Image (cartoon, rainbow, N blue to C red; front, side, top):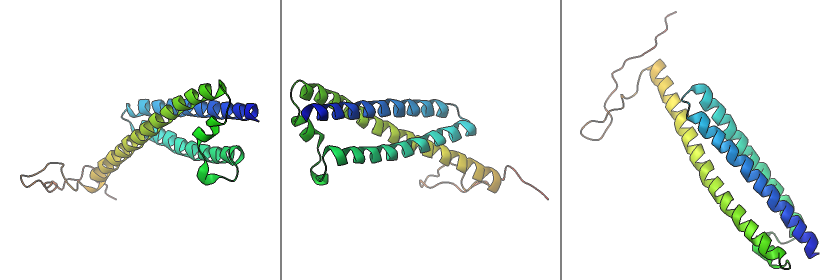
Length: 163
């Protein structure tokens, strides 16, 4: 049983590692797109972000299915450390080291994804504010007065259509 479990853990960790590598490559691609300040690049980065979120959700489902077979009937007692402790040496040490490395990669991925989401959100907000100002007139000119409040807009509409 332990050898079969060790093989299953090895396969699971390999899949996790592959997923994280692909996800981090997508984050790098989105970052590169955001370095190009165009609406098209931001739209592509937004698509990558949506795909990443969907991939993370799909991966959660795969993990849950794996746990259902690796530790059936114990949803509150699931622990990778517990599973690894049942394995014989040297598989236990090797897989524990592999698991720690993947856990660190997952934490970095989570941080990088949060940063990407914040950057994309800021980019989209910037474009939205730009176009609102462009077509409806500025709601503020972006300057602050001595009291710390934004100054009133100059009420200039940059684009006007007449029909």
